[in-house]
Image 1: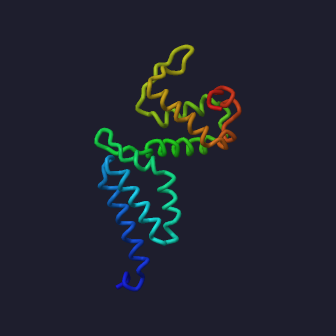
Image 2: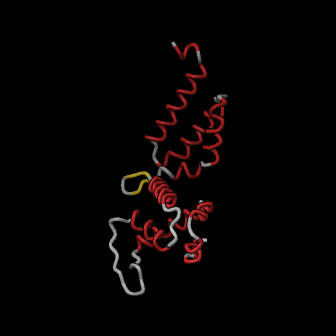
Length: 165
């Protein structure tokens, strides 16, 4: 009854359901053709509210197709990194006012790697495992993506770790 009175609403609903079905049931082999068909349907729908989504599908076409890659029986996505970035952002916000940059860095390292163990030596804070190097790389990427957060840390941190800059 509602769709009879508002045909654009019916079209919008059907397109949304097609995209959800595509996203749940398509394999990497079928993704390129299926996405191209969806892009055409969204573009031809004439629904103004879908124009931004249509542009998103065109601009991120390669990335959407790559998201259908399966590794260890799971589709790949960036949710883990986004979660880590959010955790780092909250820790930095809460750490505002740290005067000791090593303590701020160690706090971030500890909070995000609680299951790791560290060997304390005279001149080295900890042995860097491969995972810690990857984590340090994630911190570097975070600061490159969010340069305004440099201001939240003391200048000592930036001087102590110039490779972040």
